[in-house]
Length: 329
Image (cartoon, rainbow, N blue to C red; front, side, top):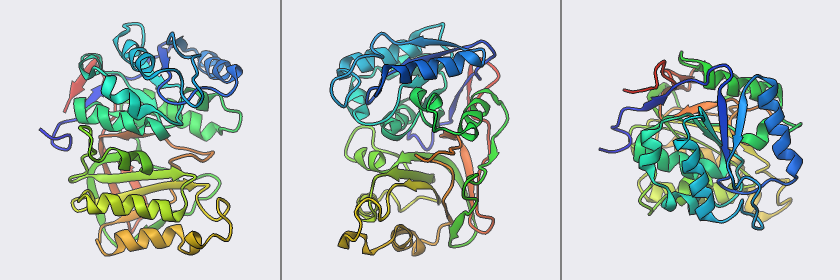
């Protein structure tokens, strides 16, 4: 059974006083106090935090060796005291962890899994292997970041505690403009994440399944030429042929400020979207508060969503969490 055909597996909501387990999957902290900031934020809201043994490990741009990162992540899923598993942060290295995972541990202990950016690798693989609904939003370091707005933090808590569908993704507080392309609506499971990590799944046993899906993507520090290349790669691999609709978040720090005056920047990001999706005729919305910006909504991956080009909306149509230990379907 493909991931698209499998019913989503829903974990239980985070209850008052519950425990958030934290594991490094990708890059490490910059300052040790960054970890303390995240811990204090959760504790100030009445929750407990359990840090994996390797949380403070660092090896240059990695949060320790891949074996420890995989062991810590599986340990958080297996630990009966842990209610939610949150990645320490993004960066680099999550695709090193994926082959070392025992996904039966995840499947046997379904819990909300939270992370973004490089953690896309684990979102894609967990869905492929288990069908578990996961949550795309900054990780543990992000909730304590003084630059992160309350919009983002409240959205995370709402997504982890609400048993009803989240409904429409709101516009960005700092830029309410939402653009659209083509006409109509499309419904399917919301799948994706950081575009460069989605592309990196191709040719692996965990290759992303986009058949009948709503493709969600965003990226950071990727000029239009890189985004064009990634979408071309997905198109050449046939991954865009059966996508029903597209929801694009912020392309943070991806435009001219990266390479001012560079000839590769002669095509804008919107030009790239036009080139890849206009001819397909599927509904597309973009500039949603999803990705690497300051104000970020939390979206569940793997549940049914609807893209409306005419209304310029993305709606989460079904619950991401269950009332019991977990249910499927």
